[in-house]
Every structure is written in structure tokens, then in C-alpha cells.
Image (cartoon, rainbow, N blue to C red):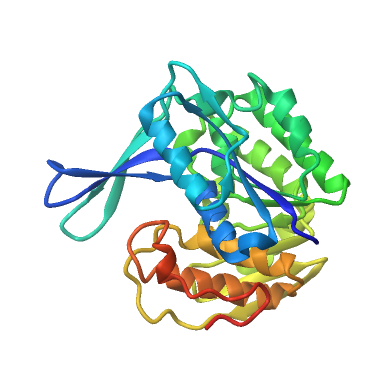
Length: 317
């Protein structure tokens, strides 16, 4: 695929993290699962693809700072809608004495909730021409029912037109008012995708069942998935490739500093390798290699100079 147009769709929020003991001093960053993947795709693919981020923000200085940071990563922000008088979502990370992280969110009024509803037809029309769409269960969860329906229709249109539609289930139960709605919309999104990137933990929380890896692949295949990479926490993955299933053990990580963004970076490495012509097993190794770099650093988006650049489809260093 010659220099594909890739759109990552979702929510990015202001992130506040402690800059010292307690919560008296906070450092401002930004965070969002699909944005994390977008940044890593832009870094790995460089000029081999055109990366776009699709969301809605306010017209405030914090929204502007986010857009400028994304543009500095060579991400096209022309489909970031700016809504006068609105503010983006915000969350605070608190870490206890054992190092466990907890999150506190302010996102109910964020303008991203009207994505694909307020001006959905215009954006959706543009995205039907894209080569790759990437989104997650969080993307679906924060949208209105109307927005979800329009987005799933867009996924189906792109898939039927020969595009790559990649979906990470990334389930957050607190974002859904009704667990049955979460099952319904995730099932529709899986059926509308041609690459699904779930974790065992996500599927267990979403469907309320505990299966082995091969049984989960059967469930995904029954829902309509043709290609799926089932993540299990770093030790192995299960692969569904056009009806055939396999298990691939992974090298143990040398050290883990912070697992934030591990799955998002894995997805970026996998998608980049697949776009470069690698098969699913080699693409898993690319994704694992990138995620291994990310977890050795703090934060979901690590400094660019902390990454070892490898060409898509090549073995990680």
C-alpha cells in the first residue's frame, strides 16, 4: 500500500500526574489510547504514511497545546474539530505507596461526545476515502448512540471497500451505562473490522466469561473477525488468521518501569508491520518489540529518542 492515509479516531484528554509526593504539585500532559497509537504509528512509519487524528476539542489554550504537540509528531489535525466555549476532558493519576495507580476523570461534558453526530456526515464522507481506520472500545463508549451507529456504518463501508479497519476492544465498564449496550456495540464493531486487537482481560470483562485463548478466538471468529491478535499480558499471543488459529510465545521483558501505553504501542507496531507486508507472526514480534521499549520508560508516550527505530517488517533490535 503506497503511502496510506491512516485515521485514528477517539478521545484525548488533559492528563495531570503528581510531580512530587502527594497531589500538591501536578504536571500537565495529555493522554488517550488511540492518540498513543497514532503517535507511535507516525514515528515508526514516518514518511511512509499520512497519519490523521480525528476528535473534537475546545477552543481553549489546553486544546491548542494538544494540537500543536500532535502536529510536532507529524500528525495531521485537519479533522480535529474545535468547538467554541467547550473544554476537553481531564483526568488525574494518583499513585499509592505500593505504586498502584488510580484514575479520576472529568469528561462528561467533553465535546468528543458529539463526534459523528454534530457534523458526522462531513467527517464520515472524508474518512470513507481513507486506507486505514483505527479506533477502540473507548472511542465507541464516549460517543452518543447516534455517533456509534454512524461510526460503525463507516467501518463497514471502509471494510467493504477494501480498507483496513483495525479495532482494539479496550473495554472500560465505567464508560457504559448498560453492560448489554457494551456487548452489542463491541460485537458490531468486531464484525465491521478486518483486524481485531483485544486482550483476554478486556474480553473477560466485556462478555463476563473466562475462556482459554483458542476459545476466545472461536468467539471472535463467530462474531465475524478474520484476523485477530489476542494479547495475554506479554507472555504470549493467540493469532486468528483467516480461520486458522495459533499460539506464539513471546520473549520475557527485560525490565518493566511503567505498563501504561503497552497495548497501544503494540498495536502500532503490529499495524505498521502488516502495512509493510509482514505476516501476522512477524508483525506480533514487531509489536512486542515496540511495546518492550515503551514499558522501559515512564508514561504512555515515551520520548522519541528512547525508541529504537526499525523498519516495518524487520526484526526489532
